[in-house]
Image (cartoon, one colour):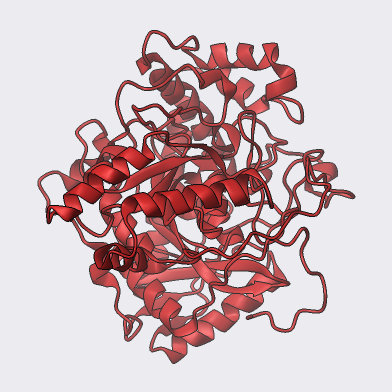
Length: 550
């Protein structure tokens, strides 16, 4: 089971209170970033797609090993020095050997599929039974390597992908403190945004977003509980897909909530995200949420890549509380809606969801209960050598290691979760039933049925805010909560930029509607091409913007 709660969602829950929590910081900190970084050298694989890399290997111009060597050198140049993104926690010490084995297969005439020999980074809450760590960013789990790969890791290996390394994240998927800075972990420090290094990459899949955007890998895997794929994808100019809960197994992934957690792809193009989702999705007997997939043929999500996929599609605009949070994001999405209409879509505006904003308290209540229960189960499953077997143990570890684990913010959410009882308590069951009813039947399903919609579109979030380790995250909210609470799919992709900072729009809909969302996203992407590579500026260019749709 996995992850990560977007920090801004906690503001909406009321986990933060008072004007100070919501105010724009007077001076954002820039930890360890005083010097202006060197701009990275030109990189032969910058913005290379999975298809580009396959062509290079098929022609003999590259091999899986040479690709790994180039990406590892890029990680060292961009992540370890120069801009110092701090997006990658560790490189797989076995990556080159794995690449050589896959090269030998290719030479023998065996190519497993589109991911054969492709270097992929995975978030450090995804379990790998190898020489890499699986820590959720916490120093407490450095001695706690799982006995088996997470199911999605096994699927990636089977598909021929090379696990290049583990990415930094908001520690414990941003479910430790009400005053956290997204992208900070005790193990990795503060991850930074490659477009402007003093800006937040968002979280909790911060490292996956920053690394994939900066071409430190072909694509990356993130995880989400509420916003943790789509929000960093928004901030880092990526395509991010938060799948329907149950499409991708959570077994072997450090959890928050078994009702909302899911892993998903983060990539520079819709095509690459579809390729990665195809590899990740599938039945797993160890995760009951995937039982719908048992005995079914695998879905190839690249079959939905139709350049004319918007013709006849009905798209709703849920303006209530999902627009009006960021004027920059609103303007870009308004332009995107005009493009979608021009490309053949019917726009239903407004198509409001009546229950938006009614679930903040109950969602947080459910997450607190499930985090304690699910994390304790995960910790108990680790090999006996692991010293920390419960949430209570982690709270104690953090107290004993304050200077390393809590130099900027505490563990209020840990403590709130620890105080909760079992999942049989009426308070939990009532909150869970409320979430299910208002997000699904009386929420997304009702609106889409009323207007006969194929999808809904809203701004994913606003442009990236400044890193602030003193006050924690701030900024506008987003549109991730209803898809997250319902367990329904949510896809974000770039729709432009503001002052050089990328902005995304979210396309979401009913359960299992990933093919529809991908079809809409691909047609829009091919017609507009808003993705721009990062600039690695030390701070955002705050000159007069030439165009909100640039």
